Length: 482
Image 1 (cartoon, rainbow, N blue to C red):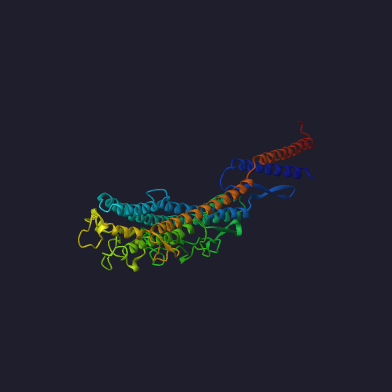
Image 2: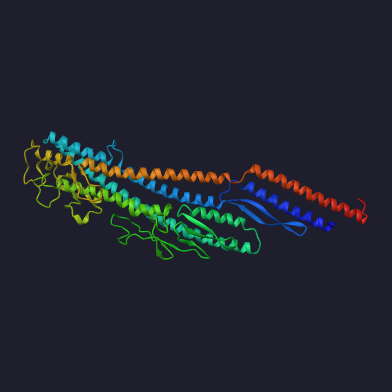
């Protein structure tokens, strides 16, 4: 090899070693940076020397995809568990006097106590308070369900906005990466930025990332929905509902569906938006919330129908409501939805509405006051409370239940949903943690980087020695005295 070739080879080696040192320094400096992938130099022979062919990002794409899907599962399960926990908290625990079960127990106890002393105005007043508190507890629980549905609707709107903004940024980075790659530049930093952006939206919808030409990528949902493929992202559409009530439903047209490119898509197991936080909030709004509402409506219906039956109060004219009403009216089978929000104590026994608590003892339809010591009507109401009967609603499994049993069934169903959601959330979080740990294990090992730096230093020193040797040989050949 000629001296000029040797010098060219050594100088190219020095340049490669310098780039290698920069790469190691970048790896060490970004060891804790989210989205940063370890760099390695790609070297290629060029003439008598070596050239830097580019930078390789050391990344396990399969592991990255699994971790992103786990992030989506964890985000969806966490959102659902948190919402169902808020709903379940309104029901309270069985040993809490302020819980729904506690209010039912207090009402039953007040009926028994009043029957024991029908002449006691204090016990009749306490019975009135217990019945009013029970109706209020049912209304409060139902209002909490609709509040959770409204929060879920707003969360969907926020996630859709996040998707659209982030997909537009990913598309811009795709264009920048393609341009940088086409002119032979290093697009690794841009690729890191793109990865961080995709990680940001992965919890919203489970993603598949498919490599395309010139370093660009396409993004699809796990069930084939196209989010980005080419220069422009697909527009995700959604219109929040504002106020959400029991009557506000997707089927009725009052709640919007999510659209991809203008076409409504599903969020169920087979829908384009299946999985992730977006689907979980849609399920809470459209399935979980309405199911709890239906169960509360079933409880309200049973209270109204049970205590307006002739066996409960023979003094009631046919068609009149009993001690519990639909906002003052009798129950209409065509208006069961939202009944829990309208459940109210009959004004005839409510002194705040001009009523008289003595009607508990005499009967709501009594034409005149009865014997203060007569307990027959109160005993009928107590027997009605304890009677095991079938509810007229299909929202709960068939069976014969007392008021206590029906309240326990509604509260248990809410607790069961919460527990199942919390179990799913814990499992998804554990899986996500395991995959993040696996990613971290493939991350930057500073000890390894320092070992690489030592090898680079030795290579730099060796090339520098070649340059020095060639310099001395040229001096000898040219007769230059050192």
